[in-house]
Image (cartoon, rainbow, N blue to C red; front, side, top):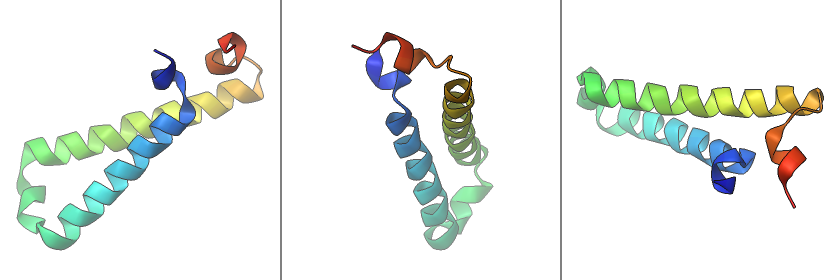
Length: 71
């Protein structure tokens, strides 16, 4: 469970989503017309971005779970 609370995991997922979006936009433009591909890439980027922002906002307030319970 610790990997899911690690901000580096979410940063890697965000990078993967952006790279995947760039690849699809540059090489396979027809895939962007597929609803499932577009929704999957959008959700990957949105969820990863939300978790990164949430982590740093919680950290600024001293409430971040990852820092409170790590050993």
